[in-house]
Amino acid sequence: MRLPQKPSAAFLLGLREMLPGTPAMVAWSLMTGVAMAKSGLTVGQAVGMSLIAYAGAAQLAALPLMVAGAPIVVSVLSALMVNLRFVIYSAALAPSFRTLPLKERLGLGYLVSDMGFVFYMRHDLVLRDDPMRKWYFLGLGLMVFVVWHVASLIGLLAATLIPTSWGLDFIGTLALVALLVPMLAAYPARVGAAVAAVSSLLLRGLPYKLGVVAAIVAGISAAVFAERQQRLSREP
Image: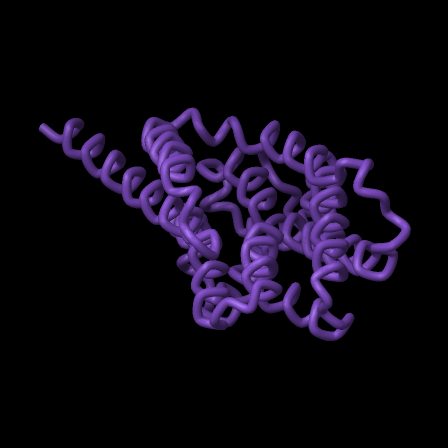
């Protein structure tokens, strides 16, 4: 893949390439908006939570804890643990953007998302030296950002009009699985996913959904260990 050598053209290409992912984003963000509304958050609180967390999984992990009256530290820790995957994403993206000024890296870092990461990493190796890569990534990221927040706000405002029979969570999950399964081609990712899945089942009885937090930590640790062992086995 070669990007257009004009910032506007590379940006628009990023917008267009993200279009196939919008149905999954709309389903997930609508569901998240509905969940925030039914949890009792005000519109201002819900919008603030979306802007700060900017991750449906983290928001959905924290909401039940907040409703149940769990200590705020537990709710925040749960959201942070669910979002730990973004540390992995950032490490994978670093070779492409480490030469950019700090303020640009901070801006692009805020726009990192599950789908944006998947779409960008399809071309990562050939884009690392392309001067237009940041504009392409910006297009991907802004498409996700706008679609997510607009659909989330719609779900928040129209919560009473969206029936649970629509199964938005199931639709969103299926769409995300179709996009994220290719990431499991790497051995460390498969190890991490397997460990996280088994851990979540074994620890599902923990209070405040702490089993999810523990499973995420276990999965990430296993993936890092597997990647290190794989690297060492390749060294002479």
